[in-house]
Image 1 (spheres, rainbow, N blue to C red):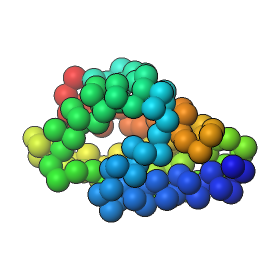
Image 2: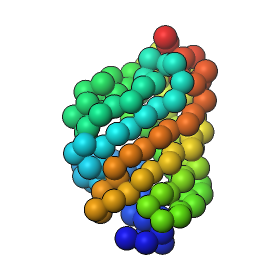
Image 3: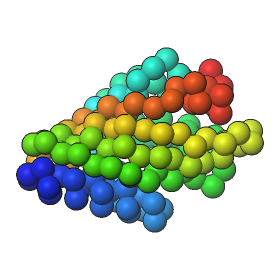
Image 4: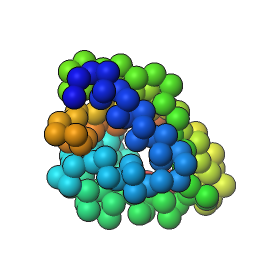
Length: 132
């Protein structure tokens, strides 16, 4: 896929997620995806493979938010296999803290799937909302 198709692929992925279609989001990821969250928060690190991502990040994070989380893309920039996405998220932690973060994700797409993701975010907000 070219840059324009890759931008559309990421846009569609998050459009489906915003409708609550987590399966479409997960289906866009390669089984051996490498997903890195920067920083030193309880959720920071590199997750190796879709199952690791689900087990160590998505399930624990979902357990700490009330009613799910939305991530809305604001800007997508693509070059070859890479797409950078500026986005904003909205959620409420179960301890009552707002978790409305801003993100920059860098995706690498190959063979019709997301192979790698690096997520940049306000790590202090993660700690405030979800603890250490």
